[in-house]
Length: 249
Image (cartoon, rainbow, N blue to C red; front, side, top):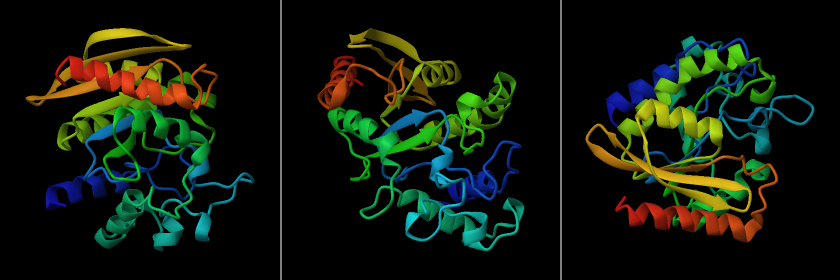
C-alpha cells in the first residue's frame, strides 16, 4: 500500500461519525481485498448486523467481523493512530478469509452472482463496496429521506474515489438506488438491458479518468423475492459478464 492510499483510507476512518452511526463502530471502507480485486459489487451501506448481535450488543471474540474503537483501544475516531488504522484495514481485507463470520444471509446470493460473473470474494478477485460506509441504527430503510440524502452527500465521493483509484475492470450495482447513484456520479452510459425473472438488469460503461470500466446492475436487492433462486443468481452473473464482454469491456 502506498503512503497516499494509506493516508486517504486513514482520513476516512478518522472522520467524525454521523448521528446515525452504530456507536463505537468504524466505517467499513470495503469487504475483502480491494487491493487485489478486479470486480467490485456495490450496496447501500453496511448492515448494523456487521457490528451488532441480534440483541443489539457489540460483537466480540470469534463473532467479531470488524475492528471497533473498543477493540483497538481508541477513545474516538479522531484519535486513531496510524497503526490502529492499519489494523482496521486488515480486518476489512480479511473479511472473507476462511473461518471468518461472514454475514451470510446477505452475501450468499451476491456471492453466487459474482461466481457466475467469473470472480470470487474468497479468491480475492472481487470485493464489496457501499454508497455509504457507515453502519447505521436505525437501518437504512428506516432512516428519513433527508437523513439518507445527508449520508450520501458525505460518503458517495469516497466511493467514487475508490472506483477511480483502484484498477477495477467491472462494478456491479446491487439495486435500483445503488445503480442510479453510481451512474449519476460516474457518468455511466447504458449499452444493454433486459429482464430475468423479476430482475431488470442493465450493463454499460464509463470513462474513469481515461480508463474504460464496465458497469452492471439490477433493480431489486437479492434479499427480496426475485424469482431467481440459486441457479438463477449464477445465470444472472454469467449474463452480465457475457453482455459486458460483448461490449468489449
